[in-house]
Amino acid sequence: MSDINCIIIEDEPLAVKILVDYISQVPFLRLQGTFKDAVLGTDYLRHHTTDLIFLDIHLPKIKGMAFLKMLTHPPAVIITTAYHQYAVEGFNLNVTDYLLKPFDFERFLVAVTKVNTGVRSRQPDRIPQASASGNNEAKDYIFVMVQKKNVKLLFSEIVYIESQREYVKIVTTQKEYLSKMSTHEIEALLPLRLFKRVHRSFIVSISKIDAYTADMIEVNGTTLPIGRGYRDGIGNW
Image: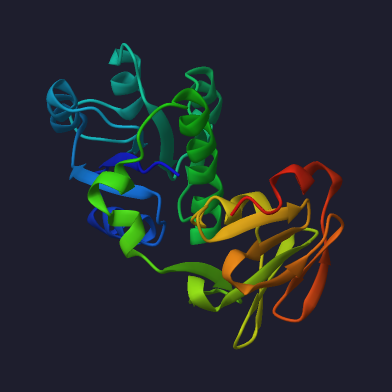
């Protein structure tokens, strides 16, 4: 999975602090810099490329929407603002998502997962920067929202993940957790070398696999079904 390079253009220190904290919890995001106005952001983009901009609307000097219209080939953009009335204009400018302040980590994760899917589809031959830098490889955990708390889960302790409507059940060697997100969203946070989707509703830890057939898989003593559309990839780990 490729890293997504991102920058923040935001003049409120508390909003910047929250975004920096959220970004640090997502393994595929790599923060390149923060800028308090669009002029500084524009100057940075003259000499650097990025995959994603977190953009406030009410900025000093140049407003966020005006800045966005100035970009000839804009990267993905997630608007972060307290003002809902700009949503239509934002989506007309093809922004990826529109986050109304205050937004929680769960909502943030939904937005950046959209970007992750888009970047991967636009750049299928891009060499993941994590392979060069080791940033993703160095992380052995993720944070997920459980009962309004961000809970740290070690990859080595996750056994399997099961979809339960708008929630996922994360079964670890220690206990089980329920988090309000989809299997697609949590799959985007997991390293492909360690986890395998075997069914529309199940993702398993490869290291916890005990046995498998064409129809089922045993993971740490639990039997799970293998979906028809996932059988071709079984055994290729």
